[in-house]
Length: 65
Image (cartoon, rainbow, N blue to C red; front, side, top):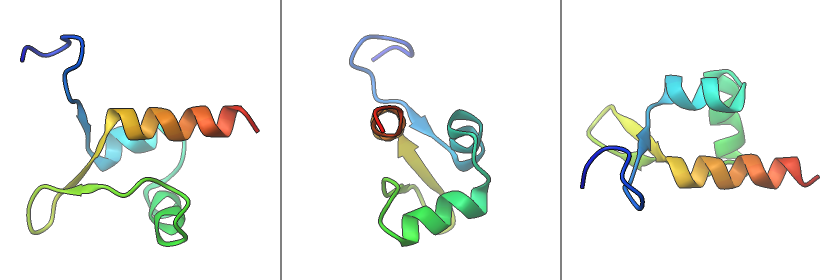
């Protein structure tokens, strides 16, 4: 599947998530520990990434408050 193609899966690394949601890394991980932020996917022993769709859904849920 080509990058940017409709239906493609996009992964966001922590710096990308921070920029997109406007929170710092520690704030994101605090929300994660509280169950108030989507869980990341493990890419390796020390690497995680979030699905773009999960982050977008979280942002939309905050916009409706």
